[in-house]
Length: 206
Length: 251
Image (cartoon, rainbow over the protein chains, first blue to last red):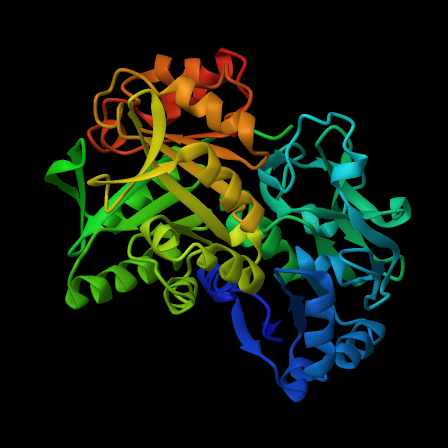
């Protein structure tokens, strides 16, 4: 039951690795293509800006490896910016190509807010509302709180959206590719307390 | 719906949690890892650790504590104290911190905020400001509240946010440790000036102080130390009472 956390030089992987180990899941932080191919599951993390992260993923040579492994049906979970990278493109400070594993794009949250008094980034604990049942929610109850930190969000992806959080508009919280084994979560399950750990546990068991 | 956040703060010196009155007369309270575990189970929405150690030995103890906390507590962790360079950011982020709080370091080198935001993202950079009224104006104080910089607090807040600070901790020296309530006029003044989350600090003495705080829509979180450490206010009670008062809470 090995999970490879893809290390492409973006963000802090300490908590993610710790949370999986805490769950008793064998987890390895790696940038090695052979290790990613050998792992049973992949997690694509990420914080920062989309363009920079996509460039780093390409430079590391792992962009194509992730696409290839997803095409082969290996379970893949994108977290936060890692979730955004699953989409076709992002409009964060320009226009950048993503992995194209899920249809839709990543756009600025601020102009779409219905309540303009709300702040961006969308930071904090928000309740997650399940639209469609999924094995990822095996241990998760509708309405539990998860921790978000982001300024951009996935749009035009209704067909793959499994759960949303309300921020005067339905913020895309969880997505799954139509082909099946690619999931993405906009929030940080490794920072969402017991509820987040239960989501990670479910992913490790898929 | 997004919730308001309750954040216990742990000041750590030489591996122990301390909290003083008006920043002076620090008293030993508890073991940081045990206290962090206790707060996590009680429903804390985040934890803040300030390293108030001066020595290298104390600093390595702090890093060790941070790693132990981050290995078993999976809520956001903010670390501050002695953050002066990007290397300092790196050091604490590698040990499991999610956000880094800068205060005096940013006053000494205001470019630090932009440099850190560029490297780690705005969400990672928290500007902590110690504010005190001086002849009717809000001044920024440095060195743990001991030195008046003469800098206008509202201008500093605006500069920090423009530079990339993702959140502000506003600590009122006037109300810190006094336990007569948060400094609402000061907090409102800062919240009106910037559009990032505001974390209120300094002055909480009872549940009602938090209820009053969250009647002010510009405030996103309340931070406190001694009332939690001394169990004058229990987190589950506080969050339940806030929820009853109509404040959205994670329970």
